[in-house]
Amino acid sequence: MKGWGEISDAGSVRDICDQSGEEQGWQLSLTALCVEDAARTVRFLTGAVMACGGYVLSRRFDAGESAAIEFEFVRATCVEMYSILIAAGLELTAQSHMIMGTLCQCTRETLEVTAGDPVRVELTIRKSDGAPRCALASQQIA
Image 1 (cartoon, rainbow, N blue to C red):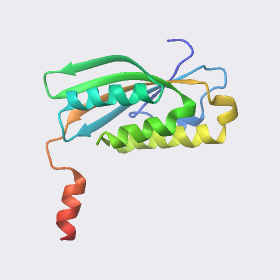
Image 2: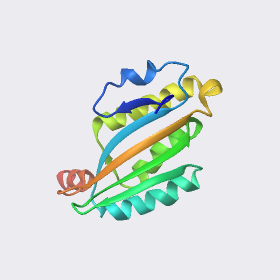
Image 3: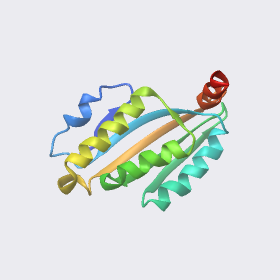
Image 4: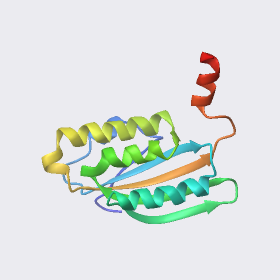
């Protein structure tokens, strides 16, 4: 799609800050694990994204305990959207965290110019096989 810079968790974080000023949007591809049912998580995210002013473009539920959601929001709300992903109990990949963190930092530094720029996210969620890391950490502390 013309005008959209594509950033994937398979690519380089540097690409986010190297985006041309001529482009009118961002295309992020993120991956996460969840302990709960992936489809239930997508349903929660649908309401949360819309409550923060975002638009849900599509949702997919796969038989293999995975799901995906594609949504769009303006850059001014990127911190809120990042917070929603964490609050949903998602365990983002390290690269996905770096992408979102860098986007938030770059937005903060250029907010007056980029606040209204659209960000489109395609988030793939897979059900985690193991216990959540916080449960494992609490067992080690005890």
